[in-house]
Length: 386
Image (tube, rainbow, N blue to C red; front, side, top):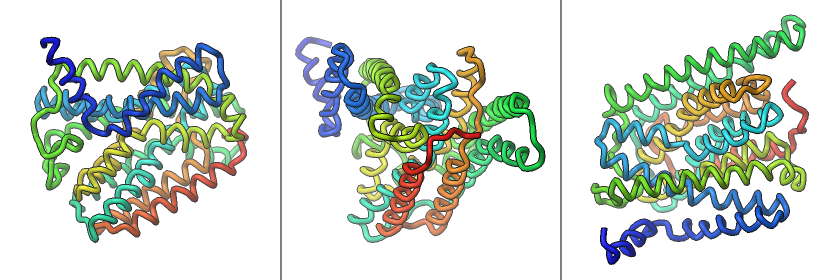
């Protein structure tokens, strides 16, 4: 590529979502705050803002790279990197040790709840303002919701195990913890296998179910050609991933003091704040396609992302905690409040998608449920899980 071509490449990279990319200015500000040892609260806020456009660039680079490598491998890339920002943030938190496990687990449940209620709610609301009634493939949506319900069931079994055992008989605490840890590892293996099978199902054997009326590119307009070439996509993906990792390190380093300054519990920070930061770029994609009356794609983003959290991100975090050599393994024992809100969110989703159409009032109701859950988590005492 000649020197004369370079400015045009830069213009192509930053051609879409310019307001979102303005948040990239938060990255150098975060570096200055870190080097000058400024307050943790400001570092937490600024690094969180910087992650949003970086995650957006990761998503766009993955989509463009996927288009250049064929549908099979491209679908796998999109599925694997779909929640990369959330995974990177969670891994950075996980590195700090068992004392941060509640925050890691809260980010898992928060991402599932946020995708179902916040992402889909905003998509239906704003899409409904432009289009009186929006239709989507109810067969695909119902299939995705059923798969999500089964995935969430597996994810929440260790919590059920804990409370059933606690009700039936008193166990010595170390034995109880070991049982839950072993069960979590075993369930993580099962979920990982199901994730691989779900990719085969959605990308190979039944991919027609997940191809909506406008089956391909969510963010690149009507053109089916890649927006960026393979080399540009790889460069953007590499740099944005490194940026997310660095900003996540800053975010995690400041999160405890920021939480204390704001009077927020670890569970609230994970379920609401960290989940929104990690999902923000995906939120904007779902909303934009819904406003273009592509509700199949918006529903697929919300349901598919939640399912990937349960089947891919959660098992990866369990396995990563094993490799990190912490004194205990990350288990899948969530707080009772998290468990109930995830179950209720999936139930609400099933009700919303059953008729294959949506209107703005359904978006209002989804957002209202999310706000109510957020208020409950805000007032939840930070007293641990046991």
